[in-house]
Length: 259
Image 1 (cartoon, rainbow, N blue to C red):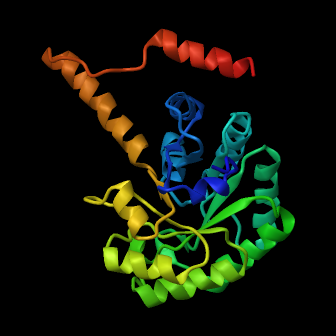
Image 2 (image 1 turned 45 degrees about the horizontal axis):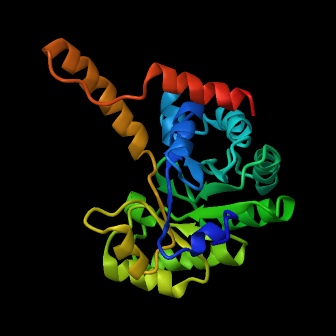
């Protein structure tokens, strides 16, 4: 199978893209054998003590891109709405991310929980692809995520505009109805990316035409729950869950520094 980032979307099953929030989590996914790694803006923002989608992760994401760009697998960075209202500003930032060696970015069509006009993201996409044509750009359609214009027709109208502007993939978080999934994937000429859908396996989603599944912030939020559960287990005298050993984590970081 083609091992380029674009080629990984053409396998028999959807590309399962785990989303990291820092170098250590990315190294964990690398150690587990994942062929590509994404990032989660919520994980990065939360680590900074800020809410997601508030344009608080601009500097942190650029630093993370520079760290993860050294990994031996393709990496895609979630850059929210591009941190700028103007396409030229988004393209300039995306070019800096691309220069770090990462393969792709996510760009979304909402801000602070509300959908923006489709022309806003379309303009950003076109500018990014002109400035960094090699970057694999995943256009996120937030219709189902925020329950706004959350119909197949409304979603496809936005998605088609983004594909026409140069998007390489379309991400529809929150989409879960099998018939709607099949209709949307069948109508688009680029891969469709979803979050995990409860009750549907990767095989099921492949049958519906899905080509990529991102874990989103789920691993980060699971790690937060596990941290509290670990403290509770120590307090209550309960067995401890499995954890990466100190020696293993040190070894991963030492190998990374030596790259």
